[in-house]
Image (cartoon, rainbow, N blue to C red):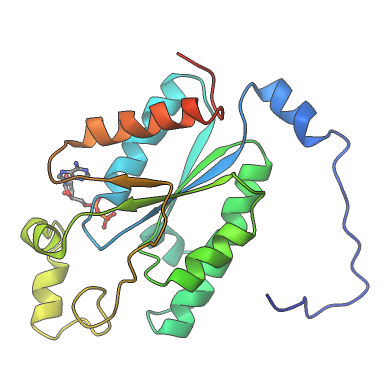
Length: 204
Ligand code: ADP
């Protein structure tokens, strides 16, 4: 990672330790990083999971690729360099949410291993859970909820992941989600269960 442009910076720590913060909140912050092709189900699962967690009084928040591209990342496109910067920024934001004690669920295609690894490296060991939403290209293309694959096949969207831009499959994700044989709820509940087992949220 490059160093900051500015010098004379001082890190200001909090008055409460991370342990104290997590004791008060009754949960541990983490990043649940969903990666997969467009239409693999990242946003749908992320939203359902967020809802399930909030219903259980767990503070959770979704960072969604399209949403952030409308604000924080509105200056970025889909070239490899812009995709890397997109992930660098959202990785940093996700880390802040985790540091605040929130279960931060991210839904970005994040096609490059190097970029995902950078996002991982910003977090404390064990606090970054890579979730490969492993829906096949064929299934994503058959779903095509936003008609993007159709446009990409017609050459109307350049650099479309899976069609004209690469997707690097995670080598060792903590979790692999099969959305082709299981519905949205089953996938979301699997993640709730996993968060419990890893001790981020209280047992049922
Ligand atoms: P992404 O965020 O990965 O681009 P979306 O969540 O926007 O994908 O779209 C996924 C589509 O697949 C939705 O239309 C959703 O209803 C459908 N779908 C079918 N089965 C599942 C599943 N098990 N998990 C998630 N989405 C599913």
